[in-house]
Image 1 (cartoon, rainbow, N blue to C red):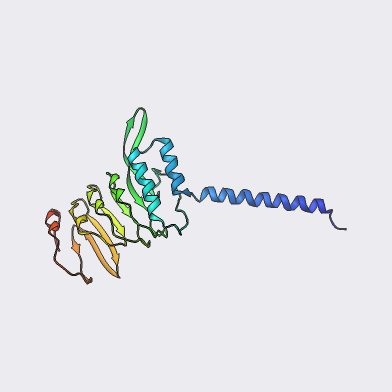
Image 2: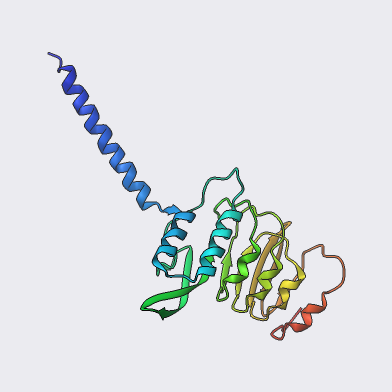
Length: 210
């Protein structure tokens, strides 16, 4: 004897509800959009206003109009060691802890836009990892203003002015199958460079070998 139609529909609806609930929980666990994370940080007051603005510009320009939105697994300034946007140099303002962005870690995110020149608003930025993306254009010269920057992983054209920064101890570029690594030692071998050595290299006081 077959079950009544109404009973079958009830079982089906319950199954669908369980499935939707599972998908919702999975989505919440997989992160939130970059813009939503920025809104969270703005509401919490955990970042200075200029760094919130810089994050919005970074989010807007890293992706082209044809690319899906960028998702962050962890909230901005999360203490998790794998968090995409990490912070430090925190201080109290009106009983509110306000921090500065120190690490931007967004490798292999299918980013195909560009780095916004406002990147230098992250005055305490120590590491920028955009490795294994398809960025367009040059690295903005304003990156050379970041005195705390030590690590840069990016595939893009780099302007000579960026070498003014003595604090860059490690620079890794993968460009046209060539490798350029800097850790107090500048190695530009296995490239097809042309032109003269830029005079700004004389400002690299930590340079040991070229």
